[in-house]
Image (cartoon, rainbow, N blue to C red; front, top):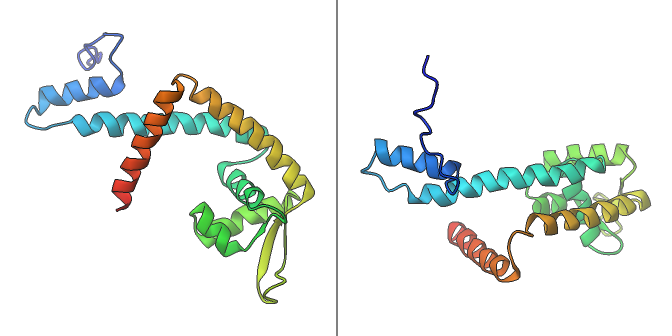
Length: 175
């Protein structure tokens, strides 16, 4: 059985995993321009790595990504920290069924409450409980400290430039 040594013959410390993949494709398919793979491959790997780092903080507070997202959305809505389930679904960009599951878990934990809407007797609003607000305030503070740590390898100008480029790239895909 081959050892695999020929698969990654490069040991250059400046090359990353994506460089090695691109070099292999250049060897095997020199007719193709693989330059987009450099951006997309690194972006994908970075997103995966960042999510791992974010989940550490969420879990420390007993939350998954979805629960954190719902609590943060309610908190940033401002006093009285209430939204309808449909607004939560739009803001968190998930289906109403996914929001319902998250709300069920958060309500069982005493972090949110469902109550009739003052504006529409048939409708419901979801609000943070006092414990939910305390939890998301602690979790969000730690989340922001974590995000600062995660971008510390870039100086302020690099961060601004990267943010601009990512915003522009996302807008071009949304167009």
